Image 1 (cartoon, rainbow, N blue to C red):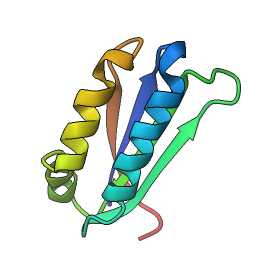
Image 2 (cartoon, rainbow, N blue to C red):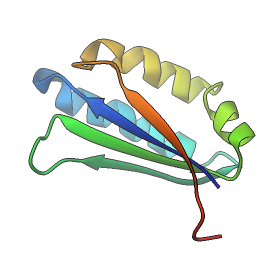
Image 3 (cartoon, rainbow, N blue to C red):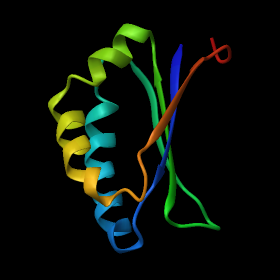
Length: 97
């Protein structure tokens, strides 16, 4: 499994907008054939902080995700709402197999 954990810090005035746009991206992403998980987390201590946990069957599936209309629209929509550039780190998922 190919996993990307994306850290996002959103400007306070755009938190609700970000949640709505990310919800739409989530709903479309979980329908992709290679998607295994697409979790969106918001910090209880710092509501501007979000984590996107994206798990795909393969690296190619994750690359294909970044070519989808819903991802491209999300990326463009939320770009100006971020306090700083998002940061993604990739992992190899070991368990579950």
